[in-house]
Image 1 (cartoon, each protein chain N blue to C red):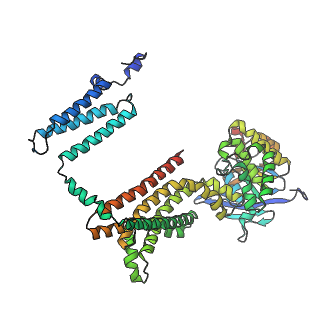
Image 2: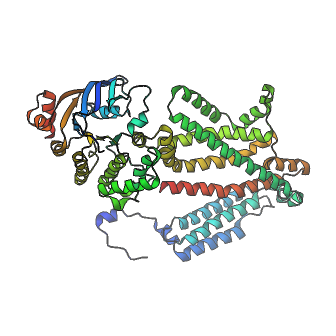
Image 3: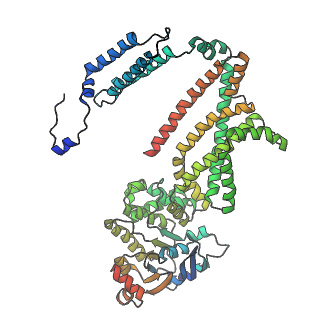
Length: 329
Length: 250
């Protein structure tokens, strides 16, 4: 035990006390033995799957899981243990639970692999997914520009505080924020032709995403514009700057840094929503994957698409996080 | 500005100015005349309409009725370009309102370059001269957040002066300052008054008013209750409201 520091009686009253057995279990040697014990338990005491054990044996599995969680928790909660050890214990725990699932679930692993991870089926067809990804990124890029322009325009117009104008702008924002993207797109694609307007699938997607996410962007921009102190505007106007000059040189330079993190978050969400365009047959990633899924009668292309979305979006999500943290400072 | 100085030149004339905020009648018919180089202090209890009065004069607040003449021009007339009028009236605020995304010098240059359309180089020279005047040459490239309150307010004064206005408005310029910084701001204002700037100052700095102001307007309940020279008002105020107010702050 470490040397007890000199404490007053009052301080002693407020010391956090752990049960002595939990402290005893935290000693390095005992930690080692605990896990050795668990390993032995797993190897010799856990029932075999094939033999369909009697009911009471399930309790021994439950007991094993409880012991594993408890002993790991005891290590994770110890402030004196190094982080490396904690990480190792956490990974061990996850591996253990996966192994238990693998051992006792009725999963048909071979068939799972054959259906969902049958990369043979994708041979010679990767270029389709690559083209799809290209279309997805293009759609996202154009719609991002569109939604930022729409959002900025709406927010600036709203800052003029014209009652009549605001009525229409609020109606636009509220409608497009409450209708699901999929519905907007379907209406634009399938209903508008009856009104004599038919947009191609790409145009439909860009218009739908720009209007839909423009509504969200306008709210972000509005929050940014309103975060600029009223005194800033008064100071600018008192110097003789026009309303437009004030917006351009005083308000926006202060509002934009505030707006960038939520806006980037919106744009990442929009990149995901381009998948909805597969409904109106825009040849983007999900559409391509679904085509392959049909022609190969195998869902592996969908898994591939999921992995591609993941690979593209995870870095972007991280970037949003970094931007948000930078703003907080 | 140099040129023919004539003490009877009328810079500002206000006739029966009213201002309503919804149900609130803030200004109930204010009339006064300010001549060239005059320094007018506006005093009175809070809520009496001092700031609103000043802000109506360059239409930062839109007056409900009445007439305002700046150098003889009715600035309430529909054909008036109010931005042009405001270039002739510098304004200094209680909360400084420097632009936080611009350095001190950029704050000063912004309006001369984009409104007066003078060249960058000339604006630089003018800006540095003004910073010299307020004693902040070494802070030219510093952002407002790195300046003390007193320094910020002096930059704000330089920013207003950079437009070379005919008139300066001060809306409680020292109220947000720590006591030890009030002096440096008042010094700058005193210099301006000596140089013949026409000034309207909402303030309760008795020392400054006694020394620099030509006239006090005492504003209460939306009306000019009393006006006169500082000596007369401070020693021999005739109106009950003025007496009560002065007895509280003296």
